[in-house]
Each structure stands twice: as C-alpha cells, then as structure tokens.
Length: 405
Image (spheres, one colour):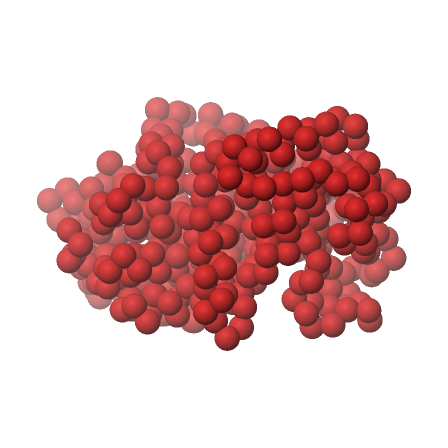
C-alpha cells in the first residue's frame, strides 16, 4: 500500500500537513492538487486568526492540538522565518464561577499533559496589559505552552517540508471530478473539460469549506455546516512595530471573545452572535463573506468595550469569515466507507491541522497507532443522522466551540 500514489485535494494548512506527515513517514508518492497559485489561501486557512490552544473539554481535540504545537515548533525552528510563536494564553475570568472553573481546568489539563496555572488579577493583566482590563479581571487560567501561528507562513513551511521529502504540488489544477473504476475511487480529473486524469491508490479530500461539494458528487454526505464568524482589526497603532506577536493571546470565556496582536494591529474575534450558516456551494469563491454589522447585533460594541486596546483605537478591517462545524465539534478524518479509495481530512482548524495530518498519515500507511481512536473522527459517524439533525446540532454548538477549542 505504501507504494501507491496518494493524491491530496487541497493545499491549505490541512492538506499541506497531510502531505508533510506522509512524506515524513517515507511515503514520497504524494501529489497535492489545488486550484490556486502558491501562497493564495482563499479558504479558512487564509483567514485564520492563528490561535493554537491545547486545552479542550474534548480529549481528542487536546491530543490533536498538542501534536500540532510539536509540529509547528519543529517547523519554525528549522525555518528562516518563524511561523509559530509559543507566547502562551491567559483565559480571563470576569466571574467567580469562571475563576472556580479555572482551578478545575488546571487539574483537567494535568490529566491531558498540559500544564496550566491560575493567576490573580494583577498577574493576568500584566501578561498583556493592552488586552486585559485589570479592574474587570478576577484572575485567569494561564497556559504557557499555547501559541500563535501565521497561517500563510505555517502553510508554506509545511509545503516546503513536504516538497523536500518528495511530495509534488500541482497548482492551478482545479479538480472537476473523482475518477471511479469498479466501485472504487482511483484518481481525480482536472483540466477545463476534466480530461486530465491523475490516478491514485488513495484520494484525500482536504478541501475545507468546499468539502461537501466533491463528496456529494461521489454520493457521499459530509456531516458539516458552514458558519460565518466575526473578526475585527484595529487600525495600525503608533506604539506597535512589525513584531508579529510578543504577548499572549487572550481569551474571555465568559464573553466568548478572544484577542491578540497582529504586528502593528490588534485583532478580536467573537462567538457571542447568533450562528450564521451558509449552504455548501461550489460557487463559494472564498471563505470571506460580505460584512454586515446587523448580522452581529450588539456583539461588536460589547466586545470592543471589553478589551482595552479596542476602546479607543479606530477599527479598520471587519471580517466575516467562514469555517466548517460538525455536530460533535471534531473534524472528519479517515476513510469514507461508501466510496472505497476516498479519504477525508475536513472540518479541521489550524489549531489541530498538524495533528490531523499525522493522524491521517498513520491511518493511510498503517504506520503505527493513530493519535486518537479512529472511530471518533470517522467521516461516517453521523451516517444515520438526518440532514436537519446534523445542521441543528452543529449550529447548537457554535458558541460552545469556544470552550471545546
């Protein structure tokens, strides 16, 4: 099996991670096809805020995120320009209940192999004074090993590592259809008329928010929902320089808000708004949608009032991005039973992409134990659910994914 060609569809951070981990295991017959030019990331990868947090209420996500941190650290150490900074992350408690939860989270983290500590209000604010109001904070949970990534630089580092190990990347190669032979997927067709056939023993869909489209063409339903998400940037600030990030990322669990530095700007995201789903469509050109303030209600004003740096700084970019959400908040990773030869690595975040790539590579090559129980990530695990139940359950978790991730 290891000698068969593997075609990965999609060169975002997940597809690049799959290629990297396959080649790291010695499988150099890997071709990654993508419709875009190198460095063009129109999907969720290109809009990701770069938060890499490991502690999760879902153990599988914690395992994937821990492995991602290890992968990103190794890549950054070997690169001329780092793509990942292990700056840590405080979770600010603004209620007594959250502060009590922080102590429980320390024990939970210890069980997952993630060190954390509870800080008082002054120490929490001192970690990132521009992002934490010491008068509102009661304390915080601090996870020093969390970090921030540059999505574009990180993806390029994964691509470069895979290429050095023998993987091939074919750009400007949109996949028109999956190729079938006797009930099995045996490759992909590209080209203007689908006349360019690339044969493979395994085809991996790492197509992010576009995943349901090629899957549906194969008669496979991927149980995921595309949702829109709010992210804001300040104008460039005179007190900041081009340093990508030099202070921890900050999360406000009580308010479903997270915030960080992006060089000369600050960024802020919120999950506190009503879920805004989209229908999967091949016509979706990218993960950024038109921004309409009315979609987010009072969330913007509340978030800006929470974070010191945003209270007086003018806003510049207002981003409405799209990502994929599943009914149990876990990505869809593994073989597709209804389509032998087809594999999936979709609905995963940059936070977990390194671990997803390693997990799938181990499954594909039968090379040692996968990172987590394969059944927990299996794309078919909701096969008996109705479309309505998948959608409603996934959207019901929208705000909750803040804690799970």
